[in-house]
Every structure is written in structure tokens, then in C-alpha cells.
Image (cartoon, rainbow, N blue to C red; front, top):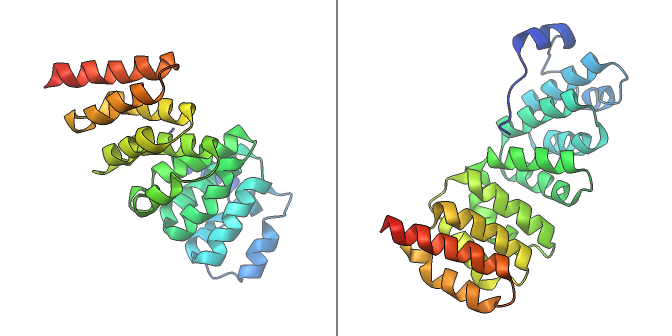
Length: 211
């Protein structure tokens, strides 16, 4: 789901006054507070300060603090900051056993197409097929001109049928005539996988009817 900033009323009820000039170490210590408002204030102050150290702390606290409201505020700050450090900090979260945490990481990455796009080819080579599936899901929201090319590369070269199937689902929505050879090749590459055949043929029919 899209990352939404908390409502003004919620901030007034839960947040302490912000001071972006508080010492970095003090803000890090405040993240361990039992007081929710203190943690939220520290998170927003770290977001205001920005920079790689603050991003690293926010990414790590996203894992450590399982309070949903706290995680939502961290997500807002990370999406606002963006940049390579945020993308790097979120990648390990895609391997988490915590589904909610994975989904937050995916939602943040979806908000950062400019930062994710230059690294997508390398990211899609991740050795973990589950991570590759999550990244294909990120592609759906990137609306980048290279999305079709990335998906074609996945269905052409990825050996994992589940990754290919996920990419085919998206190509069924965004694929053009340029991906027809790759779709046919995917069917030939996975002859014993009915889902691949079904998805690829659906995409071929849609492309054919649109041409």
C-alpha cells in the first residue's frame, strides 16, 4: 500500500516537539525509550538530520521496533530521504521472516523509482529467489521506461519458475509486442510448467488483441 504520512491529529496526540539539532547520540538513545512519543520524536529528528548514519539507524530500528505506528513513521522518513543509502539499508529487510517488515520495505522502495532504477539489474541477480520475486513486485510501481526490459531479462534468464511466473504476471499488464519472442521462449524453456504456459499465452493474447 502507499506510504501515507500520519494525520495531523495523531501527531499532536503522540509526538513530542521536534528539534532537528539534538545530538545524534541522544536521538539514538531515545529510540530505546519506552515512551512512544519520545521514540517518534527521535525518528523524525533523525529524518530531519538525514545522512547515511541516520538512515542506517532508522533502517535498523525498523527491524527492532515492531510497533506498527512507529514503523509507519520510519517508513515515511526513509521514503522522504531516499537515495542509495536507503535502498542499501532496505535490501536486507527483503530477506526477513517478518512479512509485515518485508512489505514495508517493498512499499518504501516503490516510492523511490529514481533511486532503485539504476540498481535494478544488479538487484534482480540476487541469489535468493524470494528477494527476486519481491523486486519484481517493486517493478510494478516504478513506472520506469526500462520495466519491460527488466521483466524480459527475468523471463529469459532466471532459472526459478516462481520468479519467472511473477514476471509473467506483470508482463501480462505492461508487455508490448517487443516482448513476444521472450514470452514464446519462456513457454519453450518451461514446457512442464502449466502456469508459465498459461501466463505467457495470456500475455501473448493481450498483446495480439492490442496490436
